[in-house]
Image 1 (cartoon, rainbow, N blue to C red):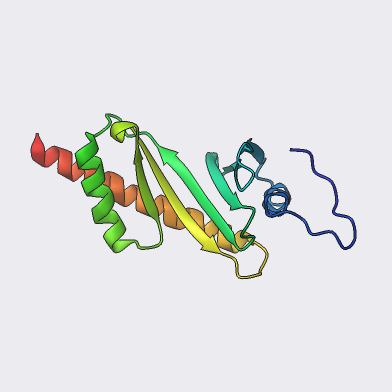
Image 2 (image 1 turned 60 degrees about the vertical axis):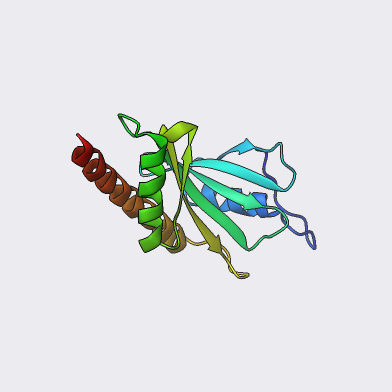
Length: 149
């Protein structure tokens, strides 16, 4: 994504603002989904992990931080959905999505900025919540599949 400074009086897009923040934080951002004029995703690196920042151009206060996980071996889809529902019942903020028949899990934390710029503290909190929820998912999944074996 090409970046350029905003000219005076010109509003910076939500995508550009998120991208600039990730550059400032040293996260090596890369725009990966720009085919939807309303919603874009920016891939970025944080502590050796690739994450996504989802930005809604119509709502500059919305930001979603997410990452994918590929369990090995992948659970069957029903088990993955049951575990996702169990985890989400205790972690209301983080959403767990099951894709490709359970072979890919997506953990996402939506954030409402309320007019404030994104911050390192907010980013770290989101990533911490995502990682904690993913670990809990894996632990619960491990217990579920071991009980069935």
